[in-house]
Amino acid sequence: MAGRVDGDLTGASTVVTGAAGGIGAAFARVLLERGAHVVLGDLDAARVEATAADLRAEFGDRVRHHAGDTSTDAGVAALLTAAPAPVDVFVANAGVFRGFGLESTEQDWSLSWEVNVLGHVAAARALVPGWVESARSGGAGGAFVSVASAAGLLTQLGSPTYSATKHAALGFAEWLAATYGDQGVQVTAVCPMGVRTAMLEEGETSAQPDARLGMRSVVSAGEPIEAREVAEVALAALAEGRFLALPHPEVDRMQQQKAADRDRWISGMQRFRTSLEG
Image 1 (spheres, helix red, strand yellow):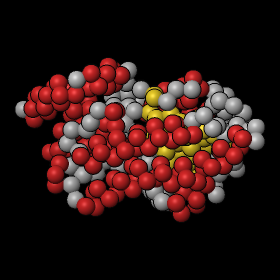
Image 2 (cartoon, one colour):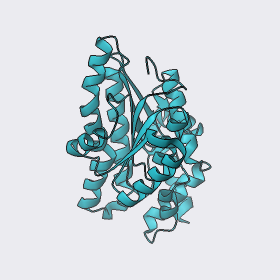
Image 3 (cartoon, rainbow, N blue to C red):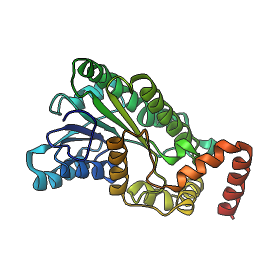
Image 4 (cartoon, rainbow, N blue to C red):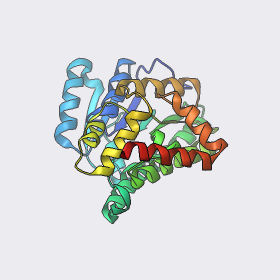
């Protein structure tokens, strides 16, 4: 791979976290269809092995997988040993939806911070210096895809942990782009609303009222989409050199309304929450 990431990723070395299912597995499939080598990373050993086996049956030895915690420097380092070097594209997708209302525990906050934010930091720490050096030497650099959420641009009713950490993930991606985007590092943050994944289904059927509220707010604000669309929109943004990828176009209008009059936007969110609670 040379230069900006485009539709043809033949031979590119790519890594996707949270790839046992949902958005991560969809990213892996789309990358493979475009010719890339893909390492699927996930904490769930049985599921990631099964997903990798399914993809390997179709795409052969371009599929590898690694089971482990990718929220730490050591975990990311172990994951990267499974990838053909150098890594060209890293998709930081692993995430958790834990912690609801002010009853969110210290463990909820800690896990959300570690997975939703520090996993991105650890990956960037491992890869960005090499990408910068590659670009300085006339090479291709690399690309970092942060799977954040519309919650990072707006908010997430029901879950303060998810809302705060997705804001942080988006803020870190913006910092990466501002600091290294002109030094050979492409950064794209993808911010979907509802996506038809196990996370959405679990939230809708949860025994926790705030979890159900959160998912009702997501599906009421916009039609849920398939995970594949998230991957396709993100890779299109990379190819076009855009930072923000919005699989739900209406999120752009919402964030503009929020920026134009935050107090009015908060009042609207209060009314929205009340309507959902009713």
